Image 1 (cartoon, rainbow, N blue to C red):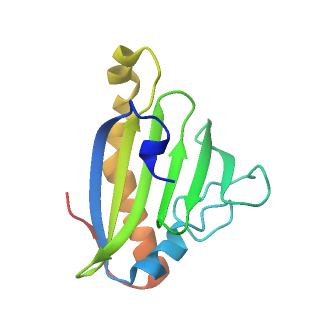
Image 2 (cartoon, helix red, strand yellow):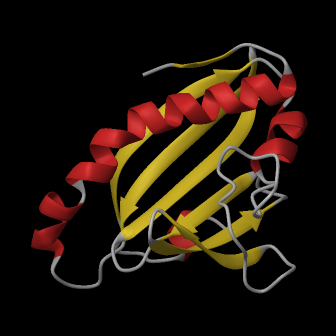
Length: 148
């Protein structure tokens, strides 16, 4: 599912790009294995509901996230409680795979409050994204690095 299907009024707040020097299907196989206990660096601990399928909820850092895996689109969407939506996707690149992580504001109201509540997640995103790339590179035994 493409992020724009969630909310046509969503606003992109941040985009981060990186390279994983492995084939896109290999990178996507790891990234999308995001259920608790999965190989993905994005996999949460605990349990997922429902127990199977490509759309489920998990609790991560105290927040409930709805996770949607789009295998055909090689993307994973994490929808937060009221304003947060992150989409991480994998595409072919001459160096292997381009991994793109985008954070959106999907709040229906109180958009003025986003500049305050988004500071923490936006400030942490580059470090978190670098860890994601590092985890993918480690799992696939290849180089991985941010571009921004």
